[in-house]
Amino acid sequence: MKNKAKMIVREKIDNVEAVCREIGDTNNKSILDIGCGTGELCRALACNSAEIFGIDPSENAIKQAIEQGGGAKYRTATLEELDFSPHSFEVVIFCTSLHHIPDSLDALQIALKLVKSSGKIIVVEPQPDDPLYPVYRWLDDEKEVQIKAQNSIDTIVVNKQVTRTKTLFFNRKYRYASLDHLIEDMMEVDVTRTLSEKDHTAMANAFDAAVQQDKDGNYIDHWYRMDVLELS
Ligand SMILES: C[S@@+](CC[C@H](N)C(=O)[O-])C[C@H]1O[C@@H](n2cnc3c(N)ncnc32)[C@H](O)[C@@H]1O
Image (cartoon, rainbow, N blue to C red):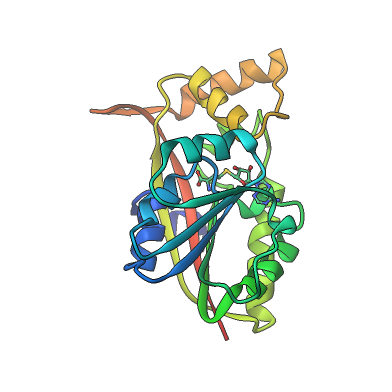
């Protein structure tokens, strides 16, 4: 047990594929994507007889999601503001959004009220010990909130509010043409992020050390974990 991180087998898949594969056929399902951003996952899940709802407090992200169309319904709101009826959804998803919500345990309790008794909550979270962390930590060190989010998931499992039916570890290649591109991407998710000149230099050094190349260009491995939680 010298290095636990190295013993984990990580599938090469991206977030959207991982969640879509887990849900399978979305026909006649009602699905809520909490913190949907610009709606990439909602578009992938949408089909004629599915009801896909995406919510996000970022007006700009929801505007972009609506502009791209695709059949999902969107609302600019935080999870805490939602007024959906209890037990409205077969699936409630947090795709890399749980650690962004100030009280992640409370967020999971809200999700538990929204999901049907036969339904599931799917949580995808970044792993703080991954190759991308030494780079992005200079702009926003999310390690603590990511650990808290994972602890919140563990709490509802230990309290037997849910059964964890699956955990998938996976690796997504994050493609950045340059450091500026990475910074731009991160700023879009949270406009309050700032970077001093000194931290910019440290981030640039970390970027150079972490970046790899394949036939499609630059990438840095970003590790994720998906937990599937079913009501027990
Ligand atoms: C890293 S982004 C993930 C976006 C998208 N799910 C994806 O996978 O690309 C996190 C999202 O959580 C949203 N968020 C932050 N606080 C939230 C809250 N209280 N309720 C719902 N979403 C929230 C942010 O606006 C942001 O779009």
